[in-house]
Image (cartoon, rainbow, N blue to C red; front, side, top):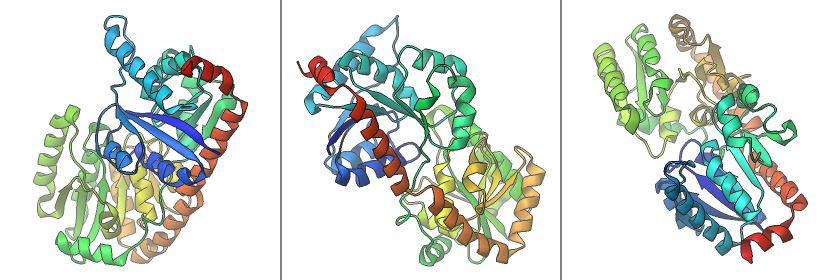
Length: 383
């Protein structure tokens, strides 16, 4: 059965919120999904989708504004044209930030709308965003994500429309690989050193200064690798962070910048370290475990539900001495690391396989569209 779905995204990159979306596009097209993509900004994900033969449009997705209505109305009109051209049946907002314009489009066209929630939402945001037109489904990317959002969304979106749709990975792509481990370590001069690391954008809420402080207290043969780059609105933070990290760690610090393929990095680590303030369902944590790398660090509101049981250890939030102690204990016990490499992979296989994710999403699409009123929707959109 064909399902023509319009996806709205504000993420131009093939990381974070678009990782599961890419999986949907690859795997569900054989089931009948006919995706159409609208990107707020052109980037790697938009280019990839176009290269896969998926219709991809660049349309800014502004918030509604009483003071500057024309950009919003112009974008809404362009979106309506996309809906008509492709005879769209369902709108999927890939991030909650897309929902305001998505909900106007849904009302204009008479189509059902769903939303994926990737971050904690406050009460005021939920009331303003969802109060007038709740989505048919609200997909939370982890159970922890749902519970963190519960105070904000309760009574605004009916609870029977909530679903947990765990972020998913292609586990045939992310997997343990001794060859990649050897290559990465040789390239970056890591040798047989004990290596910890993290892959993320260099932004304040990731709190990478905690990682730097912890590694500084560890023996000199412990190296730290940071994979990631600065973001435009937090350049000052990243410059200060890296200057301080170089000063405190010297040659023990390895900076790779942004990596298009993180699999060699994950395989090269002994431990992946999470110091974030908040994660809804961290893709990098899942990728590390899928490559057989244990994860040590803070719960970050939902990371504990990702790694436990079997994927590593949770330490008290923002407690740097406790983090340091845990890293030391793990690094002093290579047998424990070896055992957890296996169970970390098993943890991801049990709950975060993109194929499970796709199956659940497809069931929800079919449920919504089987009870929708396609005749009335077509009358509004295609007349």
